[in-house]
Image (cartoon, rainbow, N blue to C red; front, side, top):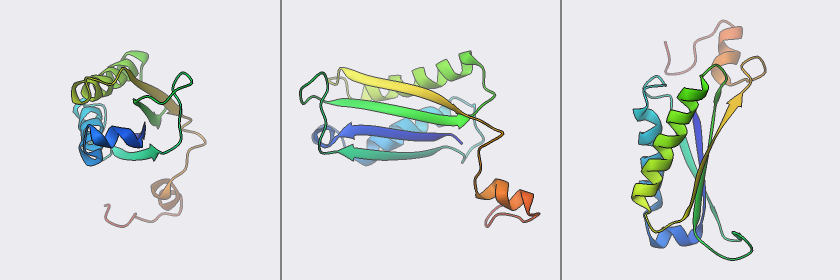
Length: 126
């Protein structure tokens, strides 16, 4: 946790290497100190067909999903850090946004939680 999902049009690739964009978002989220090192997961979805305000334009939107329990101030610090990193990387892009979404702790499942419930240790984890 968290999951950082970056969305942008293919045209952003002319301005920045996609791997660099993913790393900038990843490092910004990691730098907040809100997460255990190694817990941030980042990925990119590139769209070929999209409109912004009814026309083709560059944008970057990052959705950050994390388990509930963080304060509003912590979530704001997270979204600001990520937005700042993207703005610095892509100063010509006017449509940059970051949204933080809480995952309900009581209903969220992943491999580690299933393994814990079964009394197992996840591969690579002790």
